[in-house]
Length: 161
Image (cartoon, rainbow, N blue to C red; front, side):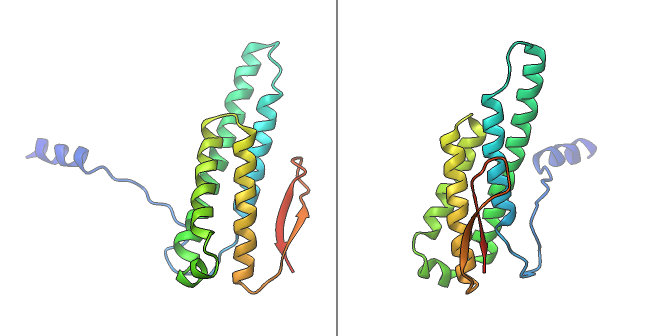
């Protein structure tokens, strides 16, 4: 009997599910996705500037920047998934017919940015996240405003007024 239980345990592995909230809490904001997209750009920049004269230090720096870039790619994908699955409703997709495609393309560019050292993919990720943030604020009947971020990326953020 014990072997059968072990077999079932291996067959039916537990997986942890993560979510912003299991209750429709109403707390949604594209800020974390924007911040994470900026981090992907910054890590991509830093990866391109790594000094290779000390190969051991270079390997360490590559590993650290890559880990951070991966983590923030996950954040972009998680935050966009939360907006797509929990916040945006059928009426939003009707009012903004490109929204579904924009969400999918932005997640795909985030995946590509994680898989490579591509500034183009990193830029596409941020661009998509900014467009999604604008739509998000419009659905809240707010006026989205693009401002220069205070980050070393020197790119824009979307806020509202």
